[in-house]
Image (cartoon, rainbow, N blue to C red):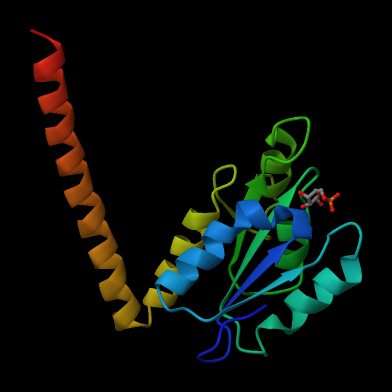
Length: 173
Ligand code: RP5
């Protein structure tokens, strides 16, 4: 699957199609910002060559950032980072009986020289926002949208604070 409107700038890779539910917020957020993306399944352990080849050719194909989501012994982001100089953002997914601690450690604990920017468990939306922040370094239009997002979040917190205060005034008499 991929978006219309220009060659993809962000690759969203997942270890299995069963990860889509948890990774969908990443593609939704990229679409929200109008960033062209492509998505695919590649597994560090079940299709290591496919994963390495994808990462190895990503830069020359025009991608700027790779987002990887995987559960269990989640080496997908690390395998990708081993084969490219593009920034790789890892999303550890809580899909195993260990509740995602396995994926978190496997994604975050990369050896020196091979960084993976690791998000929170199931942090697919943040992965997309970080990807947009990287692209925004050279794209003023995207930078403007990020500034708007920050302003909207600030406004929302103000509204929620006012609602909370009103609720407590009614409840605590
Ligand atoms: C991981 O194993 C995938 O990222 C997924 O979270 C998990 C289970 O995959 P399936 O067995 O559903 O294909 O590699």
